[in-house]
Length: 94
Image (cartoon, rainbow, N blue to C red):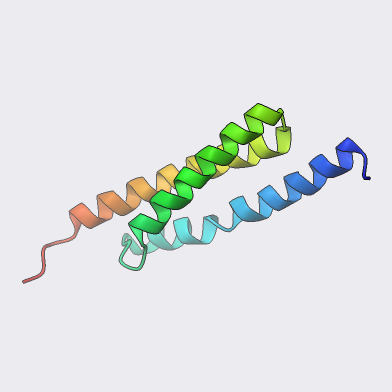
């Protein structure tokens, strides 16, 4: 069984990859000023999962889970907020 620090390092790397995966979506939305291809339902459920992982990390006192899911939650909130903003800023289609 790996040492605790090794397990935390693996968790930190996994969380870093998962968190980093949100950055291209944020970048694309920011540049295009559009959330046309984004499923708000999927992102809401994903955000709920991030909150639950964060609570789990707090419960088990895992710095890797807490840190990466805290950063992911901030990114999810920013992406979701931009999506709602861009959706409301878009002119209505007839």
